[in-house]
Length: 528
Image 1 (tube, helix red, strand yellow):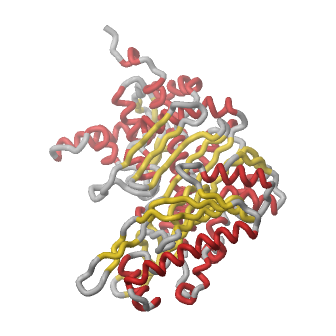
Image 2 (cartoon, one colour; image 1 turned 120 degrees about the vertical axis):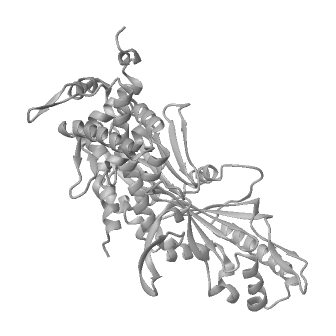
Image 3 (cartoon, helix red, strand yellow; image 1 turned 135 degrees about the vertical axis):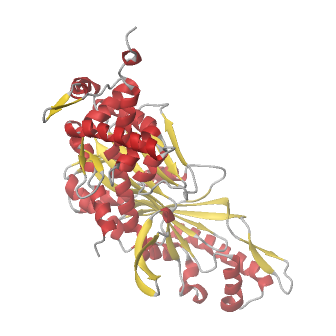
């Protein structure tokens, strides 16, 4: 079903074209793909009341006998892990202290010359969510309480997903975590399709056919995830074969999903000349309202939370900027000095909407509702994250090389005559004019455009009286007319809204950049 909201998302995803067109001579290819994805599987005794019901009605044992039962199952899991490792000639290691398990598993795979199968099994002590038996009025009861326990890490080289790991605590409630990487999956898909590529870590530094690679990457969200995850679970958890656990099985959710848009440059020099300017623009100009707009949200009085920006420039390459909205992130960083990566990380999907069946006015109908973590929503995760990455790059398309920007300023400063009427130019060194440019370029206007009132409030704040509001509105109308006659903004058909043209984004963005980074402040001062 095609809806207005869906069409809007599709249009926003096309904004990547603006950035690519702007820097066409510098860009080799682009690719949008899931990166790290963490799935979690929950059994039907995640909470204390659920566990009590499970013990009383499924296991049908005394609650005081449950701890012995749980200890027995814990030993079964560890014994099964050791047998699994022994059967596949994989090392089983007990790790003490903090260690980089992924790096260790990668080295073991290289040392073994393994191409497919179980790489290794790690066992370590970690504190995980669990339960504690406490005194009750009539009989003992359970309460949720973290518990130190053995945790098993199974590393596999999967023929479809590459290096993955499964994390299984050995005490109730046996919550299972599965890690996969979308770039690793895509690499194997391209091998099957005989597409040439060069992979470095979790990125591609060369793609022979970027369009086919993108089509393959888009399939990731549509895989039969419940079937695949259940297959992984049955491989490492023998308890799933027990009659008391076989039927419900795991309920799968998306614990964290990273979706990256990579822009590949031909050389380190090409990206090094542009990236610092992109980083400065994002750090200086992207407000909390902009970040919310990139993520498809709108800043309003009911918004509970904070939007934070953190920029780190300590090392090159590797500098990055991260914007955090509640528990979701937007990041931009460079990889290997060759790839500009914009990445959306979704930890809390309820900040976004999904189309699903619901009850409205007593009738069952399709409605927009907060999105939950159900694994079936992975396609919507992709839509939301791709749109956010596209909006972010669209807003960065105003950044330009400063050399031609100085020449472009002449068009802004000279008077423009239309139908016998002269319209004054702008002064790019004047703070008031630059404030106007920034107001019309604000990221919040990318999707719907802006009205006179939006610019008036940005320039003057809220008017104290009707006469004052009218006077300010007329002043803004004259400013917008001066921008319009120069082709920097245009009317949105059948509305009272305006939007910035491509020419406007180039000229006004350059003016803002020059004001903050290039034009000496003395120019803005009147002669003595």
